[in-house]
Each structure stands twice: as structure tokens, then as C-alpha cells.
Amino acid sequence: MPKALGHAWIRGEARAFGGNPIVSVDPTTGAVSGDFSDGGAPAVEAAVVAARAALRGDWGRIDGAERAALLLAWAARIAQEVEQLAWLETLEVGRPVADARALIAQGPLLIGHYASMIPALEEIAEGAIRRPRGVIGAITPWNFPTANVLIRAIPILAAGNTLVLKPSELSPRSAVLLAQLASAAGLPPGVFNVVPGAGHTTGATLAAHPGVDMIAFTGSTSTGQAIIRASASRSLKPLTMECGGKSPQLVLPDMIDRPEIWPGVFAAAFWNTGQWCSARTRLLVPRGGLDAAVEGLRAAAADWPVGDPRDPATRLGPLASRKQYDTVQGFREIARRTARVVPLSTVPEGLPANGFHAAPELVLGPPQDGALVQQEIFGPLLTLQEYADLDEAIGLADDGPYGLAATIWGADRDAAARISAGLRVGSVDVIATAGARPGVALGTPFEPRKQSGFGVEGGLAGLAAFTTPQAIAHAV
Image (cartoon, rainbow, N blue to C red):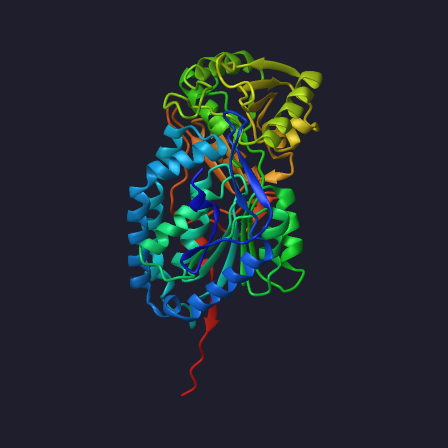
């Protein structure tokens, strides 16, 4: 691992702090691949001071056009480093390099999208001007290291704030590289700071710091709850939280016999080996549709080989850590005790024995109130249940603690509208053509519901969430 990327990035330069070393493990082999220091409270304090100084200095004085130009210069730098960022993800968390490369290449487009909306923030509405919230602390997870950092950093910076970011301890290096690229693009020192470290030390200190004006968190619901408690321990501050998910996908009767849908159904559940918060890992099909689903998903699995993530042909890499592997294995044991398990593929021979690979599996007929349906697994397990009618489909799909997303496969618009209205989720993909693929437009805002979090994400509303209205009253 590049040693230079294992240090904090504060005020536009690398900073080493003498915290306890945190070991990095290659998930493909299970071998130690490097280490970095836990920055802890000293790193957070230095970063918050730097961020406040930048806000009061050059960054706080430039106008929206200058800010957009600097962000676009950053986008150009990222475009030149897609390959290095992709390999960092492969080495740190086992992301298949081809998939990592493709997703990271979208990052500059996201920067351009938010840069184009900056003028809208400067419009005066109802006598109020939108101001940056100030110093924002962001805490990001490991499953898509580069994308997760960009999804948080871009709107925060586009809105005129400064940033102190704590990446996951599994994947700190891509965040440090992104901050270095921002500095190289001309963002003033202290605008984008990164403090690697453990969640219970560096993360908790950042959340509780009274000099942080807002917290933006992406991660598990349990960690989100700890962040909320820590954030209120010394000062009040607003938060935006995108937490766990257990999202359903429903196949309507008019689609169940269409073989073209199953590659999309498979991808929605198993992309990134099921390690993403919006993974559609609960599949509901009409009664009598079980065999069609099993057959279709088995066929789709052939196009998603499990393998070494460094191989461009691999589409399903290892789980990101030993901890995650053990968690998934625990759920597999529950599945074998309580339901029928159908393997969709296998881990091929020849992969390192100590790696964290896991093949995709279907779990048929699990108990609705059981862990496999109610808890987030973050791995390659897809539950499969049948429903008798739309009322039962809605009831099963909405019966759970999470409310992040859902997908409906069906051309019946009335049925899709009825289901969407009955689901307490932030976003719904309706796939009305069998060969189509899901996807939400960049400009579409959404908000997680239930235990999946709160706070608007995406679009102008998501950008405005990182500002605060200041009323201006002129007495003449």
C-alpha cells in the first residue's frame, strides 16, 4: 500500500499523528497489506481548526462561479487518476477492478452536475439568502470508497462549506488521494481535510466536536445511532444520515415469465457481492412464480463470475473484511436451519484459501419475522418469497425496519403506483420494460425513511441541505 496515503491530509499537506497503528488486510488473500495511524483527537482538532480558517479566508470569500471552476478543475484531476483510485479500492476492499474503474469514472460527471447548480443557491427566495452551514464533518463507509466520499464531499463543497472527512478504517487511502487531488486543483488549504482512524476514536471525536457545524453520515444504522448520540454530547448540530437498508424488489404477474428481467434482478441484489445499502435483497414474486425465479437467477449468475478482483473478468469479488465474511457466514447458517438454500454459483478453485470470497445464494421461503428478512446482511444472500395479491405484496415488502429503496418489475402502471404509495421508502425504480435496467437520475432528490436514516439526498434539494437560510430584512 502507498505509505504516503496513510497519513491525514490537513491544510493541504500530509500530517502524521502518533496514534495506534491500524492494519490493512487484502480481502483477496487475507494477508496484511499495510498499516496507517489512527489520527484520533489530535488529528480532528487540527483539521477542524484548518477548516474554520479556510472558511473565514479565501474559500469563504470567493463567489459561486469561482467555486464551480475550482470544483471542475478537481474533476479533471480525478479523471486523470481513475486507474489509481480503482486499484486502491481493489487492494483495500476487494472491489472488482473493472467495476471500480467504471463507477469512479462517473465521479467527474457528478462534480459537473453539482457545479451547474451552484447559481441556483445564490438566488434570493422569500427574502432569504442561503449561506454555507460552515465546517461539516462527514463519515463514510467502505463499500464504494471513492464514490461514497464524492457523494458526500461534492455537495458539501459546492454549497461553500469546508470539510473534515473520516473515511472507513478499511479504505482510507482513496479519500486521502481525493483530498490531495483537490489541493492540486487549487482548492485552498483547509477546505478538504481527511482524518483516517477508527470509528470509536476519530469518528466519535469528529461527531462530538463543538467546532463542527453539521454531520453527514453514511453507514450502518447502529453506527448512525452512535453518531447521533455523540453529536449531541457537546453541542447541537444538524445531521443527515443515510443508514442501512433491506430493500425489496417485486415482480408483477405480467413480468414473471419474461426471461429478460432476471439479469437485472440479479444485479440489483448481488452487485458488489451484495455490499451496498440499497441492494434489493428481498425478492417477492407472484404465487407460482418460484420456479421461474430460481431458473432465471441461475442463468443470470453465469454472467457474474466470482473471482480475483484484480482480474478484469471478475464481477463478484470477495467480501471486504474478515468481520464481514464472518457476519455473512452467520446468516448462511441461519438460512440453512430455517429455509431452503439454492446456490446460484460457486467460489472457483484456485483462489487464495484465506481470502473472503462468498458465492451468491437464494434463500427460499424464509420466515417473514426472521433475521434473513428483517436484518441487513450486506452480502450475497437473496431471500425469495411468494405473494397472493397486491395487498399481500405491499404488506410483505413494507414489513421491516428499513426504508431506503425498492424496485418494481411490471408494466402495469396502476399496480406500480399503488405499490409505490404503500411503501415507506425513499426511492422506487419502476421497470416497465423487461430488458431495462434500474437507475435514478442525478437530479432526483430522495430521503431515506424509517431506520434507513433522514435528510434529503440528491438534486438541488440535497445541495441546499448543506446550506442554511439567512433572512435579510431591510428597513428603509
